[in-house]
Image 1: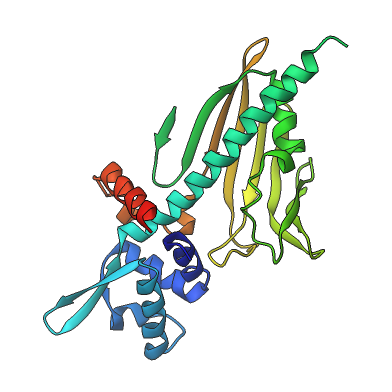
Image 2: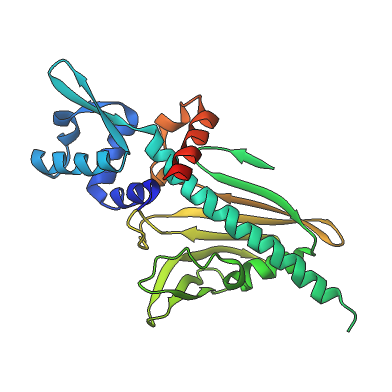
Length: 108
Length: 152
């Protein structure tokens, strides 16, 4: 699986999306991330692990506690995946349109 | 010309064809230009289908007989404008709660020349956002990514 696929998969879960949304605003400790979420702290930790493995978030240590923050590289990888996909699709499209037009304009 | 934005992908180019041909090939012949390797089905993709009307389905058909939804047609204005709702979520499944728009405009520029303006919008819903928008080393990071992918 490529980095972008891992990122897409990680965000497929609604709880993980909610966690990720929270971290988009600012870096947070686990206790703050769990706040207001309908899941247990251990579950939040498990979700954080998946997000981290997908390189969507990273951890920084502040004194004795861990703070989670958005990892910009992982997000860019997702965007890159779609960007490349559309490039490929639209190049195909352009070739096909121009060939079709040539066929259309041939004398009958 | 391409514009780098972190919440949308924009592509703009001209095709040597009439507006009508460009629109028809895009909407009616997607199966012939869609990269075969990109689908979310359970078996090889055999066909991609867009029903050419508002709320028409957008889906792929597969070798095992299954179908996989991609989204639906949200605007259908021949031969100027075509908008698709892309609903593929993070698990490569169609999620009816997720809407990102794929907007394609066809602008006539001559008897046999059409400008195509393409935009896949709302990518922040897939995970980009404030952290990305505030980034100022955009291109540098993108080049890093290319390098990493090439080396994988």
